[in-house]
Amino acid sequence: MNWITAFRDRLGVKIFISYLVIIIIGAVVLIGTAEVQAPAALNRHIERMREIVGEDPELVEDLMVNYLSATAEILAVATGVAVIAALAVSFFTTRRIIRPIEHMLQASQDIAVGDYHRRVPVVSSDELGRMAAAFNSMAATLERTEERRLALIGDVAHELRTPLGGIKGTMEGLIDGVLPAEAETFINVQREVYRLQRLVQDLEELSRAEAGQIVLKRQSVDAALLVRNVIEKLAPQYADKGVSLSLDLPLNHPGVHVDPERVTQILVNLLGNALQYTPSGGEVRVSSASGEGEWITEVVDTGIGIAGHDLPHIFERFYRVDKSRSRPGGGSGVGLTIARHLAQAHGGSITASSPGLGHGSTFTLSLPIEQ
Ligand code: ADP
Image (cartoon, rainbow, N blue to C red; front, side, top):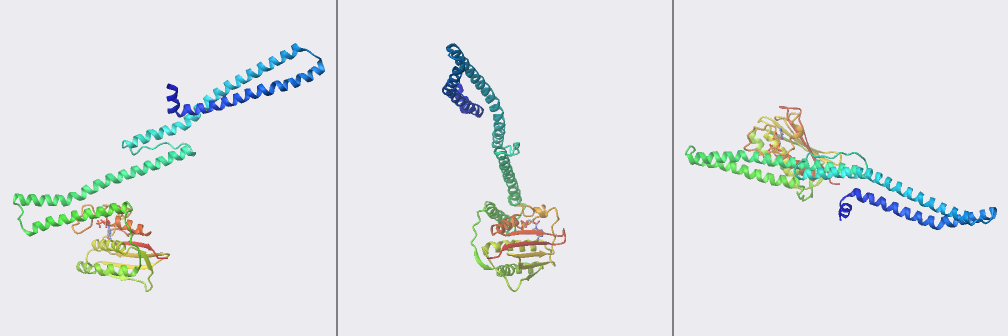
C-alpha cells in the first residue's frame, strides 16, 4: 500500500510515473511495429537474395533469427536507457517545481502562526516565479494590515487613557474629599465623557471610511454654494478667536456631482483645523476655482505651519505634529484621515503644503467637475 500513498502524496513520483507511462507506450508501439513490419521487409529482401544466390533455407533461417534477436536487444537497451533518462529528468524537473512549492508551503505555515516577515525567493519568471511573487505581495499586504491593526490598538488605547485618567482622578478627588462636589467638578468629568464619546464616533467613522463602506448620496450641487455655506457656519467661531476669514470665488462656478453633506464635512474639517492652528490675529483665506475637469478649493492659513518631515504623515490616523499638545477642544487626530478618504470616495483628493513651521499651511481639496 506504501507505493499508493507515495503516488498520491508525492508530486515527484507522479511526474516520474507519467514519464514511465510514455516510455512504456513508446516501447509497446515500437515492439508491435517491429513485429509486424520487420519480418515482411526482411522477407522481401530474402526473395531478392534468393533470385541472385539461389535457394538456401539455412541461411534464410539464420538471417531471420539474428535479425529478430538484434531488434529485441536494441529495443531492450533503448527502453532501459529511456527509463534511466526519465528518472534523471523527472528528478531535476521535480526539484525545480517542488522546491518553490515547498518554500511557499513553509512560508504560509510560518505566516499562519504570525511570522509576517516571511517571504519566498523568486528564482524564475515562469508561472512558478509569478506565483512566488504574488505570494510575496500577499504576505506584504498581510504584514501591513497586521502592523496597522497593532498600531490602531495602541493608538486607541493611548487616546482612551487621557480622558479616562481625567475621570479617574476627579472621581478619586471627590471620594477623598480633595475636590469639592460642585458643578465645575462635574462639568470637568462631563467634558472628558464627551471627549470619549467623540473619539468613539470618530473611530466608527474612520473604520467605515477605511473599509470603503461610506455610502455617498450624490447630487448635482453648486460647488461655490457649498463653500459659502461652510464659511457662514464657521464665521462666528473665527470672529470669537480673532482670526480673519476671507473667501474668493469666481463668477462662474461649475456644478459638482457630490454628496453635499460629506463635502461639507471635509470643508468643516479643513477650516476647523485652519482656525485651530492659527493664533488670534492670523488670517485664513479660502479660494475656489475650476481647473482641468476639477473643482479646486484652497484653504490658506497664516498659522503655525507644518515641518517638512511631518507633512507626509498628517493624513495618517492619530498623527499629531505636537504629540504632547492637550486638545480639549480638538479632534481625535483622525479628521484629516477621514477627510482624505471622503475626497477619494468622490474621485478627488486632498493635499497639504507648508513653507515650514511658523509660516502657515495650505490645504487643497480637488473634486471632479460634473461632466
Ligand atoms: P486633529 O486636528 O484632531 O489633531 P487632524 O487629522 O485634523 O487631527 O490633523 C492632524 C494633524 O495635522 C494635526 O494634529 C496638526 O498637527 C496637523 N494640522 C492639520 N491642519 C493643520 C493646519 N492648518 N496647520 C498646522 N497643522 C495642521
